[in-house]
Image (cartoon, rainbow, N blue to C red; front, side, top):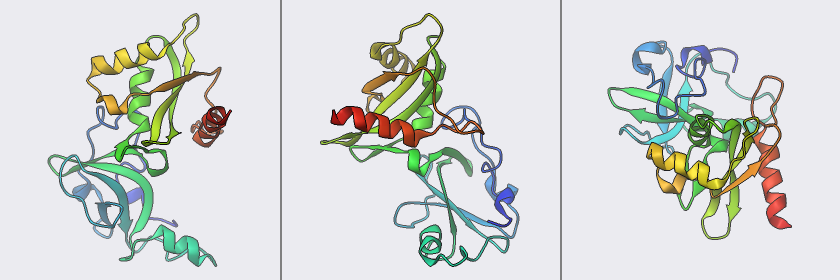
Length: 212
């Protein structure tokens, strides 16, 4: 992307605490530049407009690059058939013409066909007094495809067990299918230099432990 991304709401201003609760979204139709088209689509490319629906945020405009240099395969994967750039960000359609960031597409956990925002569960875990840091990733499951696994850095002097996690989520009214079914204690959450969680390391770790 050469330019234009700054005209798409929440891509530049999203923070870690508003998948479902916190910042409710942005009036994107009035915030976006008149030259930028934005929509939320499902996996088949259909536009989503009903509150509660989640899909990928895509956009197009004169400031969006035309292609990846000498890489037609990546270019094809990065754009919809009608020329919208695929951001890889999952957004939720809200009431009153709002949309809000939900999670990164690659971090969504699909449990028995239901999409779970890892970031939503992480935010709940971080509200627990026993939890210093946390990351949520998928773990493979033969029956459901994926389940939820939580990596937790306990607060000093604390021990965290699965029942601590489920009790918190139950108290918050989180649907049971979103609850972690396994937790791993860890000394620190792996992050890159800018603080982004390296979830590929955690996914590889839990897969390896399950194969033993």
